Length: 287
Image 1: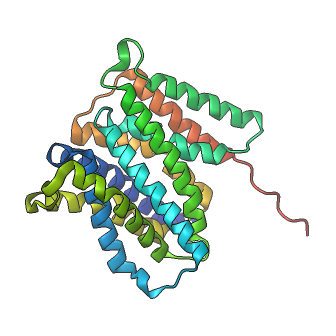
Image 2: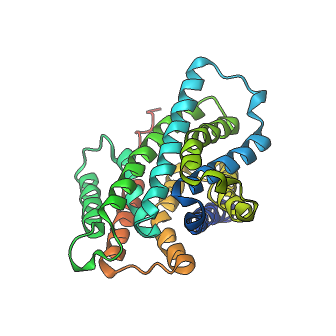
């Protein structure tokens, strides 16, 4: 019975990850039309409109502390998306997601002191070395893109920390406000980079697909799945994001990776899986 009850939530999380990385591949297809900044602005603005209409945050009152948390959460989200999409202009999707994934991995390992945790750190560093543009196997990896993806990872860490604060005592409406804040931050960059191309009706279907696949659909699936799945299992499943990104980049964008790059992605995935599965849990209270 337990296996049956957990199967559907796991499937929903996996579908959400597939949607996220498919949306990222579609977003990269927007770059020749509106640039990375324009694609970021379109994704966040359209996603914000969908989430605001669905969750109607104006029906909820927030105090000053909650507003500060939401603004920090949205600010981290906006910066994360701007940096990540900028990174995609010079490095493959799978590599960018693997590099960005070091942010949440750092949050998971923060304060760890056990030897096993240091092993996951060393594996992550090894993966990063394999992904750096060094030697014959650098391929399409540019150091500027690497730095931008790592910067997005730092913002992702902030997104997790501030998102937890914003979500405490809140609900889906706080996420809608966070995405709206991120859209407000990204929109000026998009207008500066793309101008009137942002309102070209011919790109609206692709832009809406990006917004739905990258934000609205995964968020909705996670909202359904999370109450029925252990947090640790959710973290383990999310560790597969870089692998899904590499697969999406290969199928949709024809981005072929060299063997060292695939090994680097695999090392980061394994480190994330290991850290999530073995992270210390609080001891149960003594009866």
